[in-house]
Amino acid sequence: MDKLSQIKSPIILDLEQFKELFNSSLDNSNPLLQEVLSHIKQRKGKMMRPILVLLIARLLGKVSSSTLHSAVSLELLHTASLVHDDVVDESSERRGQASVNALYNNKVSILVGDYLLATCLIQAAFSCNNEVIRVVSKLGQDLSEGELLQLSNVSNSEITESVYFDVIRKKTAALFAACTHTAALSAGVSAEKVEMARLFGEYTGICFQIKDDIFDYYDDREVGKPTGNDMREGKLTLPAIFAINNAQSAEWKELAAKIKSGSATDEEIKEMIDFSKQNGGIEYAAKVMLEYRLKALQLLESYPDSEIKQSLVSYLDYVVDRNK
Image 1: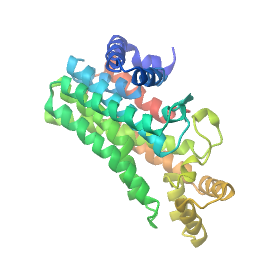
Image 2: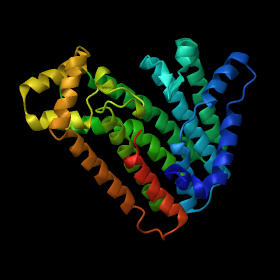
Image 3: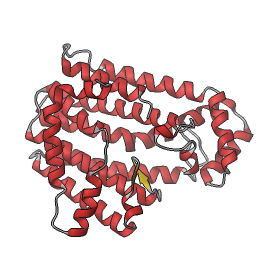
């Protein structure tokens, strides 16, 4: 049994219920809309976020109807953000499958993304929990704000870790935190346990994004994107930020500014990748990621050993050890 199957084993029946509810939420009588939604349903994702919702709900109590609707709502919001992101980034592929904008066009993509957002809010309402609706709605704001913050950062001459973490907290970490937050709310636990769950999700999301960013420094198509893709989009991530600031060299800061402005050549991007790797950037990013992993693990210490707790520990290990 592979690692992900082991993680899912205590919630396998819950996941089946989630899939049924998610798929039924994407049924529509409009022929074009149904065609696009069917295409989206065919994506073979790992379901990392629904798994997290279900595991946290089980850790704190049980998986209820409110839990399932919360998980579906968040997955719909995540899916909508990916459909819109592919338009913004002009991406032609998503998880090895043609993107909606590549198969159809930008107009269809935007409208389908909007439909998914509206459906997400309907599912949040089905949770019958106003706090869940608030968390989901706030996540929609955070994801948009994170994207805009990333865009505005391109013209920002500062190269700081604080800006980097602001972006990933609003984007990736906010989504993971919303998963664990809504799971705790659906379980009806104390405010203290809700906050513990929310923090576990945030720390896990930060680990996930740092690991994703490290992938971008290696020439391996297996990780799902070519080397230097972030830099081609004007993004400087933690390995480069550390190496540039640690070197205190005007030459590398000038090259960083070129990358952020989108005027760097492929050769210059390769130079920055090599410089970051040779000057401790990868090791530093990995160290920071493991620090957040430890903070997340410490939040689980007060819970007795169980199959669910072990799955959450394994989930965290999977996030930091994965190779794609």
